Length: 120
Image (cartoon, rainbow, N blue to C red; front, side, top):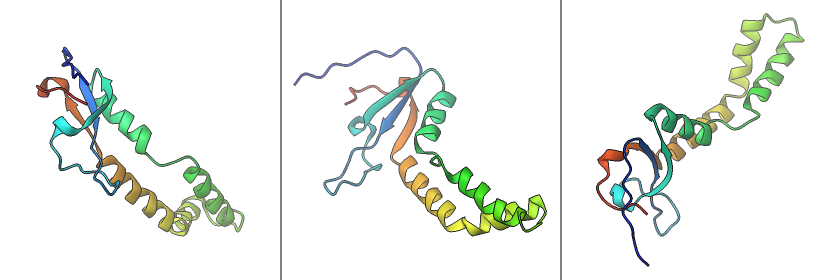
């Protein structure tokens, strides 16, 4: 297999950490071992891609709305109903937050001019 070095003028690279033998990600490995999974003109574009990819899944807003509706139907004011709803679904929100933290730790957005070696 032959490796080629590609010249990238400027921009941001989205890299994913390599996996360990057990299947978990190893973000402590040097960037030359990481895999490029995206290229963006701006850091903001790269970070937005990470947020879209590893952000909260669909349905949490619906679950919050359903939980709040239960309280609204009881005549509880809107603000208080949503505060109670957040408490009701807090374990799920916490789980999503923990998953996001773990997943976002396996990617990095770095300036393309910081790379002076071939990527995988």
